[in-house]
View 1 (tube, rainbow, N blue to C red):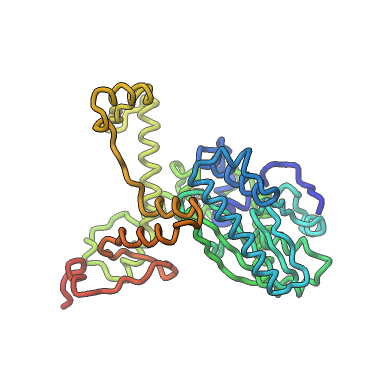
View 2: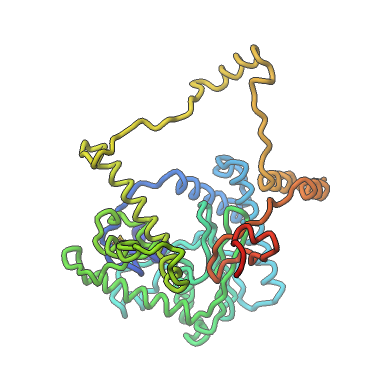
Length: 401
Ligand code: SF4
């Protein structure tokens, strides 16, 4: 389909749909800041993956990646090829090659029906493989440190919905709605997580988002009322308005305000309520710290707090000259040898190729162990294994009465 969008980023970016779909006010307070170091590294890795899968190229942008990044990109590309081969073996009639970095837009018919601007909603999918009208796979490469789940992931649901809507009129709407959709996240640890849903679900989601866009476009910052604010950990965390937001402050006060009961005397039901708001409160506390620093730097006194100099480690002005100098004086003693972590060694073994890797991996298995397992709290959909309570767990929990 011809690309009818003219902007680099959509007015309502799928990557932040979780925020603007939860809190209308978030969209009005968003700010465009220049990309940080993590985003720049992420773009390089995406570009390298595209060059590798489309042209088999490991020169150019690939050489700008660190060893770990190169390893991640290779693993990602291998996984895509393998996924495609497996689908091919199942003999679909209309299997597409993996499409890499494809711009997905709303088809003109929908723009017309819903009165949406083509620049409002579009996105660039990392990988799309379809065997329509039966199956669609959307794969996203995540290079950030924060783990992301494909489960009900707004960004991936929008990509999948847009991909399906673009298939008309080759397939009937019913066929598209019955399509099995697999949303996958490939993360920086080389793990891939899937979530399977239906075409109907992702198409409905896109329609909901179109409605949300229309609601937002019918408003303006001056016309926002309290009902347009919806505090929640995820949306508030990256909201530029957090430090000034009365709604977020009220929510935090409800969570922590006037609490005169110690946790040991609170019922499990109430504890559950409070526990679920801890992340939101932490987000607010981080914004308070940021604001105190900002005011202090601007010369405003905040109580008896003052600006002090943070201690930093000394660093060599010229590490190479320093290394030469101290090697002459102290020899090997001038250097610290640091063994890489088991996960890093694991990557090195795989990067080095098949030869000897079985033996190396066995060695790694023999040389590593898991420190004694400790319990922590997770939610019902937490993928980590349940903690099995053994006799020594008494030291964590105390004795049962
Ligand atoms: S701080 Fe939270 S509630 Fe306030 S505008 Fe931002 S996202 Fe919405």
